[in-house]
Image 1 (cartoon, rainbow over the protein chains, first blue to last red):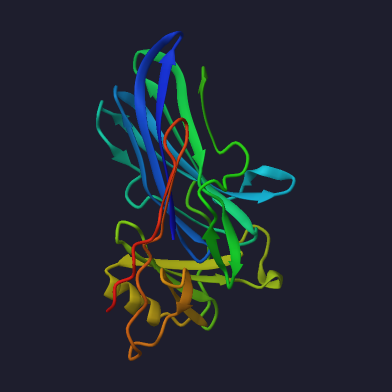
Image 2: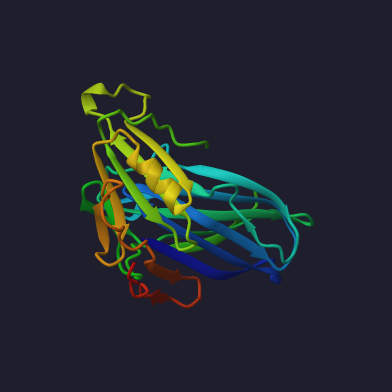
Length: 158
Length: 119
């Protein structure tokens, strides 16, 4: 079974919009092993230092928005991306294994810089939650089973 | 950040799962959780090996792992079913279940699985 996320995002500097991005990822589960592929990005303007990040999140009553699973994170530097070019987390996407929490999801973030503006722009999103159904297997919940803060975006000047 | 620290599955232990992505990519994963009393600090607590390829290649790989249990995902059952030995009857339908979620002002859709086809 699989769950996909797609979004259109807009980013700018000051009060000026710089571009539009298309974001997508799809997660397939195999037992407690997750495969995120494709993890995709496309921008209407050229960006530099595009980074894909991924992690597994676990949920408990204390952490309704999920917390990262230690040691399960990974990242991929996609580099400089021309306008209009769709790029993926290559060569194989993001894989992770964890079965010590009954409710989990997969988190992905896309971050990049601009050649002629300072700072870093980022978008992130979590997959639909998946639930332990026994025998080491997990099933995705309904498409609105997202937990708190399922997606977000921002800018850092660092 | 780098690859997740995982060990190798132990012969005679663990489960092998077979599934197929929406893109039609077949994928098998052998997963073995080590006993707590055998795991030291800083060492992996599970062994995982996986393999991708054609349906035949993946199922062949899965069946030849020296694991304890074997499963394949069935859309019809919406669950994992036992992966029968090579000389058993036909396999269940491949995974085609689709959840499409959109956020940040985009549409949100659930696409039901296609009807299973015989054979």
